[in-house]
Image (tube, rainbow, N blue to C red; front, side, top):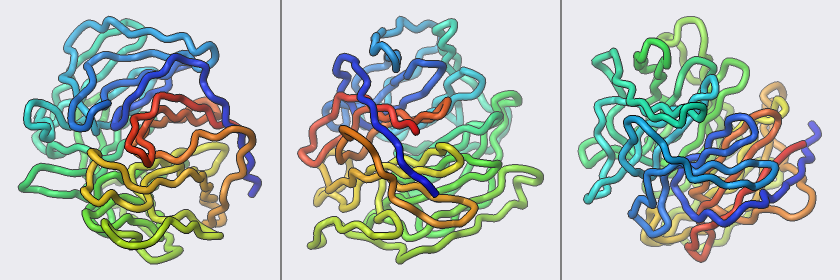
Length: 339
């Protein structure tokens, strides 16, 4: 496979944050939530940045504006942004909203709280991962409260019926900071952090059609599952044929491939997002047809090592914004990756 892409820096004013979401609608990126200081949600505003001009707008949203939060997920379906989960409030615990999803319309600049029609729904969580198909917001794993701990469940929210459906639990350890994406009617997952070590060595997938409840995960293994642990000696050393173990990274489709970008390869000594670990600055592409990885060659200036950033894909491009670097600084920049 040919995996040569180019990075372009977005010419926009600085907008520092981590643990936020980024959603692409048309030629605009919509940035929501996150933090600048650890465990302090920065605001409840939606920030709009044009990818071409860099023009910025803080949107004066209407409707049922959600509580400010960090570590949530967002997905775009038919030009509407759907948000689920995260943590906030004085105790900075997972926000228990009884399975509610918040939708934002960029056209009307209005938030709507969507109450599920099902009695079963995902428990409150943060630092889960999410993506969207053409019909569903998809939520996987993350960190629940003290009674649930880290999770490995997967839920689909139908944005028409407002019904949650739980599918097969993913293999391997419960985890936070994982990443999922959809390509060709399959949900793919890579990486995460199990509370002790960074995870990798395999990419998992499950078919998202026909009888969802009966579908089972399958795994493509290419190494050991456990990576570096908190406080463990050793530097990040990349592999020649597959990405290293990582969490708080991205997993996105581009040109029929599945890209994984950046992320934490060695956890911080204290753990969590109040200190920095060691981060990757690489990009890898997985070819579902050959089931093989190849490191992506990029041209020109690159975003640099980071984790806890936000990313999305649309119209043949991947967009990245913000995050944390090795000095624990909240990054302010946005980048576009394209062929």
